[in-house]
Length: 597
Image (tube, rainbow, N blue to C red; front, side, top):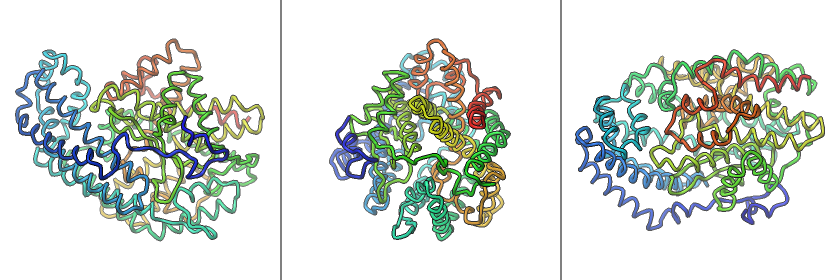
């Protein structure tokens, strides 16, 4: 472990908490290697197009495998460029020079990749029988069979080559709306006393031990969001309309369908998940928050009390080095290999931890490219939730390391399964934290915290998904006013929390800071999918399923080569079975039962 990661004896500061080193990608935005990669990949893309365009259907199996391998090599370089540009920008989104660099690289990558679009389009036009013959002819081509299968999933929704190129080239303007959102959020400051806080810092205070501080933070958050709500409304309307136009041209049946197709999951499986969670609102979130209100001597919780520490909670700050030790120990108790993989992120400066002005306000694991390694971004402030976030993002990072063996085209995991290792890592860490605690009140606090995290992951994310569904449906009728957006938000929040949470008008703009609505429409249900899936997986682990560890690593190593049915079959699980979702939800319900007892 690096000295930077262990030198602090408190939660750390910007000077002591570890920062990542992006030099494994490029030395800097002006380095010669980066400039040369842009030139080389431009030349390679043009040569590839000249050699193969309009020829894909006529290639032998081996020649098609050669073409795909060349395409993968080009994409690897483009992925490296794009990853570096985004991570460099995420370090300080308020920096105009970094923002300009990110935009210029995005536009350059769009230009370079446009001549390559023909490959996937032509692959989808090959008849099934002819494609099967090519695969039978060539061992080399069979290596890419999962990628070819996934490319051809889009066949029913594919447009003409000219329209696909147009949409691809225009995508940089869609990305500009996303950039506007990111930069607006990173620039916002929330006055509290004598301080001007970032979005991350004001949200952090909504988990403060001090009730008045939580209330002030919530009202300040709502006030500043309200002052900027027209910008967020415009961004939301523009992106929803842009999506509606493309969905209509592609003949996609529902706004959520494009996400389901990209996740290689059936509409009815997603609907079964959402319906199961919504049917459990009263037994999960309504029941728990009524219980929490009772603990806090209230008839109902004000919304700023939803994530409040329990009265017995000492609100102890967990030093960074303690958090790292806890998570790695939890990983190691399950598997020494899992711990060894996790340690790489701390030994090699692959993680950026301290909150600071301008930095991306969330947390993520970026896979970059298989020839490099993932990077993790956190905003660590010493709460138990921050420890769980570390466990979560480290799970993503380990998953990305294991799946890298599949190569650039097949390493990415569909979003529904991309949350598996992250949520499993949280579960391991929670169990380790609970096992270390013997005091009954403190164990209650830990269990309650886990329940709240699970409700945030399952109930809240499904409510987010419902908000998106209603917004995208409403947008088909015309532009949605800020008042209507607020009303939709309040509707889904009241439904998901029931009468256990008390709202005021200030809360109606809280939808506007959620980045997933802007970055990845309908991404949010994957969190609920992952949490319920991991609950079911963990139940199999606790029951002592033979060979569980080997099966688990095989699942993570598969990347995008297998879909959910194939990945879950070795664990005797089936996501198309409604009982599968109930099994996951029963874990949450069981914890609430325990707390009630």
